[in-house]
Length: 288
Image (cartoon, rainbow, N blue to C red; front, side, top):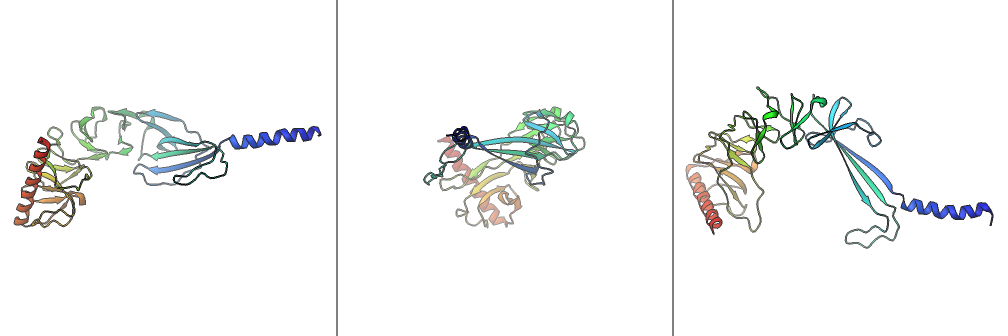
C-alpha cells in the first residue's frame, strides 16, 4: 500500500471519529421588552460579545443606545442514540449537541447604566432617577420614589415611607403606616383542590387587590371568599365561581378584575350570611 493509502486509511477513521464526537452547536436569541413582548433583533447577536456589568441580580449591557438585561443558558445532549420519552431509542448515532440561548430584555429608558445600583434584595435597581423592580420601570411620582429608603412592608409590597409598591405598580393613595394583610379569607369548597392564591390588603381607609384599589370597599368590614363554580350559595344572585370580596354594603368579583356585583339588599344579606358561615367553618377547621 502506498504512503498516501496508509495516510488515507488512518485519516478517514480519525475524521469520522472526530466528527462524531465534536459537538454540533446551535445558538438562539430572544429579544423582548420589559413586559415580555417580543421586539425586533437589532442585529445578529450570537456572534457578538457584549461588555456587561453585574447590578444586583442582573447583568446589564448598553446595546445600540439602550440598556438591556442580558443572560445566557446552555443545554447539552451527549453523543449516542437519542431516545424519546415513551418511544424506543433511534438506531442512528447522534453527535453531541450544545444549544445556547441568549436572552435580552430592554429596559424602558432613558437609563444611566453607569449610575445603576441595586437596592433591597437586588431585584430593585435605580440610576438615581428611575426605579426598576424586576426590570419594570416604576411610573414617575411627585415626589419621586426614594430607592435608598425602600424596605419590605408585606410579602410582595415595598415602601420608601411615602409610596407603596406592588411589583412595579404604585398603590394609589395607600398609607404605608397602616397597610396590613389581615383581611379574613374563606374557601367555601374546593372538591379536594385548591383555588389560586389571592393577594388582598387594606389600610385604614381602602382595600387593594394586589395593586388595584377596590373602589368603594369598606376596609373595616371587607372579607374575601372563594366559591367553586357549582357550589354558589342560593339566594345570592352570584353567577360564577372564583374569588369574591364582600363588605357591609357591596360585593366585588375579584377574579374578574374587581367588577362590582349588583345585588339587591336581600341577596347581599344572604351572601354575607354565607361568608360568615364559610369563615366559621374555616375557624373550626383551623382550630381542630
